[in-house]
Structure formats: structure tokens, C-alpha cells
Length: 452
Image 1 (spheres, helix red, strand yellow):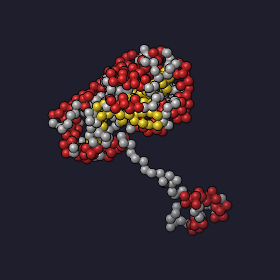
Image 2: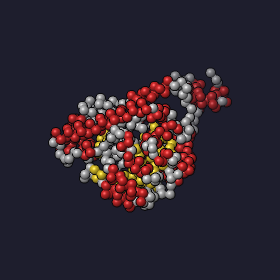
Image 3: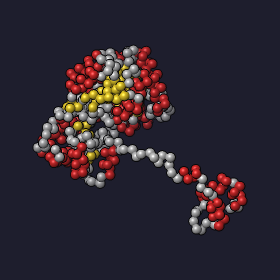
Image 4: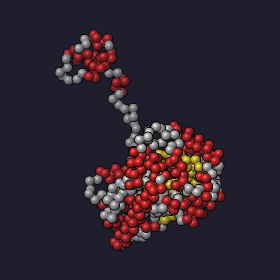
């Protein structure tokens, strides 16, 4: 054991001993004398309190917070209809068989490596993604007018697109539908854009406020960016008809409004990849420019792989080359380059005819189950004689239904029936099953009867 004089001569040794030696009544006199002689410095005192002590507690995400509350509920009859993730009839997460096959092929390939992807991502994935949404015969693709980069699912695609526009587009105002996915305003605000809204949903009809939509787009400044849900609008499940889309297209092109499509549900809404891309292809066919954010979370069930793409349709091939060069400059300091695995799964499926066909069958199976849940819930409410018109449940499309329930009714259903949804009354139809539909119908019936 070093003497007191030796410890005094070596301050670092004294500090080490102070941390290692026990501070108890059994401490030796020599050690105690040394410990007593150490005076707490201002730095030592400050280390007991965090420099982040004043950071306020952040609120739960309004959507993900539903799942947090659900998990804490011990009730055996609880139902989570909050988060937008597909569930089987048994209420289990689903990994598509075709995804399992694609992963098995990738694992069997001994020549595969784990090197960084380019900043723009996996080249085959980008080409195949553009063809999937725009169509293989798209003039924009054939004329090399599309710049596509792999991004971190739909969220990342929207963020990269927003930051590109904030840097390189003359109009920095984006109009988003009211309501829309809760992350949209946050993404675009942080990207550097000013967010405005346009009318979209009519609570009275629980359908599209088409006249209000047209009036607000007509009032938008020339060149403004307009966010459009390609299909299966989130959270309402209300989409324009083909004729209405054509009117929207004509109005936007006449005012030089820039379309920014968000496609999270291609094939997942109707069961048809082509039908769900129809609105986008109408805008591409007229030769104009637009942005497109794609996600494979829902339609391939690759939620945790974070697989998406941003495509910008440009006026010429030369412009597309320059746009891609600037997208690289946005991505590089943000996340450098995207992950390899999920994009490789998508590229494997989209490039093989047999696997592609298998995917479309599984995709239609998911879409059909959701459509079936809509019909079952509507029938159950009708059988119970639940007050009100519930036909919007079968008129809306995609993963979500905007029920029309108010926040008090939502709270009542959580308290009394252990059913969890967002406070605006949005429910994920994919979270329902034939077993849970009667329970939900009982809850809705009780809520609208007791809390009008």
C-alpha cells in the first residue's frame, strides 16, 4: 500500500484510490486521513448534477403513444387499433412468404458483401422502384427524366425531398391536406419549408371536401408545393375519384403548383398496384414535373427495414442528372448512405417474375382482409342498430378508417372496453379480426349512445 507521502506526490493515484477504497467505518486510519484531506472541487460537485437537468420531458408521440398505453393495460380483451401495421386474423405480425424466400436467396449467395452502398443507394432498387410507381412504359423513365435515390422509408424520402426543395426551389411553402399524417408537418417544417393546409375532409359527410380542396388550391400562390396522398389517404381513408383527380391535375398544372406525392400504400389499398398508382401516373403522363416518396413498409411488410425511395420527375434528362447530384449533397451529411438489406429484398422480388407474382397475390390477400374487416364492422354496427350512418366505413379505403368518433368517445372506449386508438377517432382496420370486430362494435355502440 502506498504511503501518505507517496499518494500526495501522485495526485492521479490519490484520485484512483478515492474511487476504489470503500468509505466505511472499517477504513484504515491512514486511508481515512487521506480521504479527509481531499476537498471536493467545483468540478466534482457539478458532476453530480446533469448539464441536461433542465431538459423538459417530451410528450409521447400521439400514434406510438397509443401502443405504449396498450402494452401497460393488463386486460385480456384489449385491442390496439392505433399503429398502422398489418396483423393477421390471429392478431400477429406478418412476414410475407415471398420476403422469406428473397432473404433465403440472399443468404445463400456467398459472394454477397457488406460494403457501403453509394450515397444514392442500390441502383437496381432505384430503377425498379421508379418502374413500379410510374409504370414500366412511363415516358419519364424512357426519357431518363427521373432522378431516384434510396431513402429511409417514406419518412426519410419526404425529409430528403423537403430539404432539396428548401435549398433549390423558388417557392418554400408546402400545402398539406387537413387532416394528414401527423408526421408530415414536422418533417417539412424541420426541412426548412413553411407549412400551410388545404381543406380535404368533410366531417359532416365523412367524405372528401372536394369543393373546399379546389378553392384552397386555387388560392395557393403560383408555384407552391402541394402534398398529395397517392392513395389510401391517412388518416381518413378518403380518396378522390378518377374524375376528381383529373380536375385536381388540371388546376395544379394551370397554376404551376408542384405535386409532391406520398405513396405509402401502393397495392395495399385496392389490391392492385396499377390502380393505386393511377393518380401519380396521370400527373406524369402530362409531361410535368413532380416529386414522389415511396415506402415498402406496408406493401411488403418491411416496417423495420426502413426501405423507401424518393423520385423526382424532371423536365429533361440533363436536369435529372443535376438534381441527383444535389440530392447526394442533402443525403451525405444526413445519413451518408442507406442500408443494404431491405433494398436487396425489394430488388430481388421486383426483378424476378415468379416472385413478383407471388408478392402481388400476398399483397391482394392483405388488402382483401382489410376490406373484409370493413364490411364486418359495418354489418355489426347495422345489426346493433347503432345510431348514425356508418356507410363511410365501407366507402373509405386502405389501412385506416376515420370513424367520426370524438375524443370523449375514444377515451370512453379505452376506459370501458380497453380499445386503443388515436384521439381523433382513427382506427387501423388491419388491427381488427373476426374475433375482435364484435367487441369493437359493442364499444362504438355504447360510446355513441351514451356520449353524443
